[in-house]
Structures are given as structure tokens and as C-alpha cells.
Image (cartoon, rainbow, N blue to C red):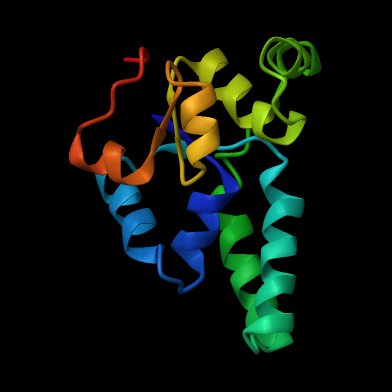
Length: 141
């Protein structure tokens, strides 16, 4: 089991330069989890694709339905106290700390495309390519 942030979820479902890496993550471990925060973040990515990449509304709605069905059992609540402790200790955003907190609670690796998250939380987070290649050096087993 892994935790994936919205970058990985979005790249998996929406064609972009990083899509092959996100799909490789899922091929390696298809038992991903994410906090409920992925939902509004994903909606914003859909909006960006609609506004700047000409994604039609009907297509965006179909993608949203598929993603929500796919993530139904993979969405796991996060404790506010865990998030705020991470924010306090790291100075990092609460948004990113939601994913880190979930990974830590589950004893899982957070797979991300966010280099800063991987740097600030090296014992928990790893970049997509490192995860896929097996070069992940997080303290999580």
C-alpha cells in the first residue's frame, strides 16, 4: 500500500507529460490511498484542463465520475492533530501535510511529484520515478 497525492492521481487520469510516470506508479502498486483533500484538488485540476487545455465539460464530468468510483474505497480520513503537528514541525502547508500524515499513520510511502515534499519529508515521501525504479530511500517499509 502507498499514499498518492493529487499530482499522482491527476497525472494518472489526465494526459500530460508526467502521465507515464504516474501510470508506472500504479503498475508497481495499485493499492493507493489518499485523504479526502484529493477531491477538491482534483476538481481544480479538471478546471485548469477545461480552462487552458480545452477539456470539454462533458469529458471532465466523465473523468470525475471514473476517478471518484476508482477512489471510493481508497479515500481515508486524516486526523487534524496529525496534520497540525506536521505543519508545526516542518513549516510546510497543511495541504501537503494531509498526505504526509496519512502515509505516516498507515506506515506507507507517500508517492509524489512534489520535490519539496520529498525533500522536507524524506522518511515518508518519495518522487514517482524513485518509487518506480526502486531507488526510494524512505524510512517506511
